[in-house]
Image (cartoon, rainbow, N blue to C red; front, top):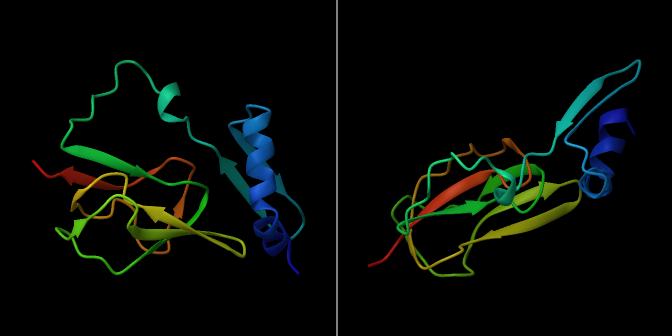
Amino acid sequence: MTFLEDLLNDLPTLVERMRHHDVRHVSLKNETGAIALTVTATPCQTAHGAPAVTVEDIPVLSPEMGRFRQNGLSIGQTVRTGDIIGFIETGALRLPVTATTNGTLGPAEIGDNSPVGYHDVLFRIHQDA
């Protein structure tokens, strides 16, 4: 295995340790490559000056760091709480991303197969009136 393959297999453990020790950024390198990981702030740690999310515009956050995979749903499609609307792949794990409310699915804010961080906004759901 390569350095990167080993690291991707151990990514869930590394992220858990980063969170446990409140480490926000780490850079790793060896003679064959380098990688930098950044764990973003959780919503409760964001600045107070951040714009408020309206009731109609509910974000769907990434449950983990990894690669985002779409689930083939269309913009404007009706979703229900708990519907699988995408996946986060971390090593051999494929974690479902579920709708957090009933409503209409907005566009994906992250491209398919793009890297994502913990709690990155993946979608927004417009709540039904």
